[in-house]
Length: 114
Image (cartoon, rainbow, N blue to C red; front, side, top):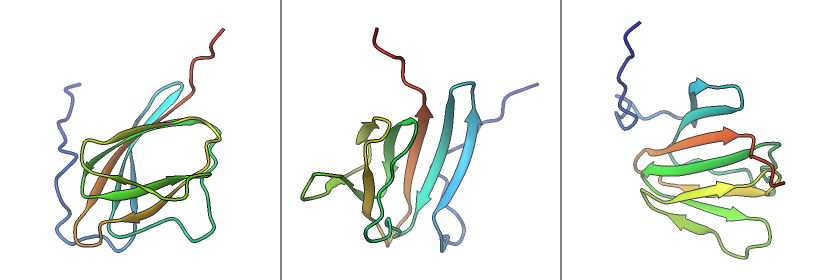
């Protein structure tokens, strides 16, 4: 089988109305997805609290990410990456509404320090 080549930054012909989560591949202890945001944010008062760790990088657009205990969100620009430990409560405060914000997210089980 010959591998396929994809471009993660190819825009949609029509910007999507809803955030898109596209699983690119899955391994035994990891999952890689592309997320496309067009102005979406986490609902007011909601926090993500995940069982797994997540490494995320913003490839295009802009976003504001906030962690519980912070008074202000962190503005992300393309190239910014964050490693989010399991159960680290966080939320997306904003994404660019005038263009696609493309994220690459790797969900994984961290190696235990021993």
